[in-house]
Length: 262
Image 1 (cartoon, helix red, strand yellow):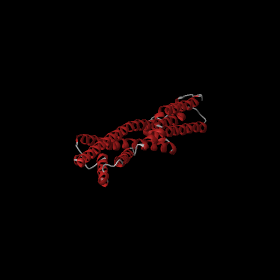
Image 2 (cartoon, rainbow, N blue to C red):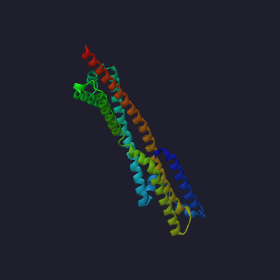
Image 3 (spheres, rainbow, N blue to C red):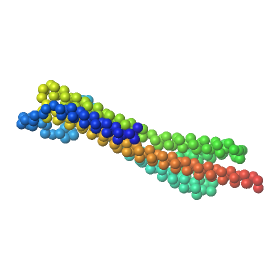
Image 4 (tube, helix red, strand yellow):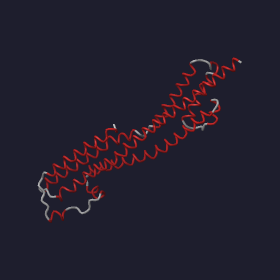
């Protein structure tokens, strides 16, 4: 799960350090021609272009995961802020309304709160002949609970991909790192030399894959945790609104019972 992400990053960094130490055990003699052969452009774009197809695929996948993370952040933020505004305004109007009918008239015709009130009113109309029955409150509570669960589930859509990115991106980046260092060792074997001109580009490409993995994973974990807390607060607001609706129903039933007695 995303909460164990720091421990996974630590394991990835340890693995990278071990691989770099293995590369360092070879004696390195840097001569003038070796320095001249070193690549002069080690920018991220240049390293991406020089990488092989496997490392390029890893980098492209991680960049796509990063784009998905920021897209989910923007879209879900707008959706969550809008839903929270509607729920809070609906809860305030429920508290101020003297009856369920008045509350329905003042609440906007969209959002989970309006759906809960409409479902409550529909159940009361269906049970008009037995309003004082003990089963009415149970049926209304069942409707309210189902609407709350459905609204919370809809709000949570899209956040699962953040957890997946946060959990897998470091390992995908580590795979690119291992593959790049393997290519460096293969280059050492084929060239039969251990100079920096052979080792440095592959090591740089490998470390770029790990960096992209962290760039994709860290925001995903942070955004996922933020949304998890925000959705929990949204569910609490829905619960408070449902409790207000149940109080309105209880008040309406008491008024109806008092009217029948009079």
